Image (cartoon, rainbow, N blue to C red):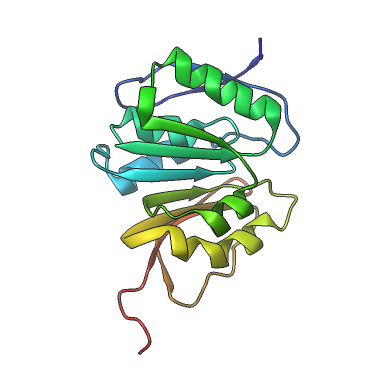
Length: 185
């Protein structure tokens, strides 16, 4: 059994504790930050499809499913993380709303045919995975969709993206972005 825990803060699974393994680079987003992000997105995600890249503890993915997202795909590469995500999905009886994919986030983005309303991107800070993932996100994002980014520094965004909301908690920068409606001809 894992000793690390994260709490779901809203929705049908509110106050449920999820466990996750010790894994290098895995640090769940603080409750306060998750609460802020779901205030930005809206408390009810009914009908939304969400992608939780670099899922880790699954805090964002399970939070979205708890708030009635139609579908949540969680992607991670580490076997112990995948095992914990599957265990938590079973504990919550998430059913078909939550799909757990054992893959590299970059490989998933390059091969995915599905598009999402919300994409959560929170890679290990001590990597260049965010810079590699950013240019690939647009192909998986529905028109009008949002991308949540969490990082140790302000990322350089693709030029067609706009920051809708942003914040900082300690040494963590977080932002909600959207592709600009105006596109170059």
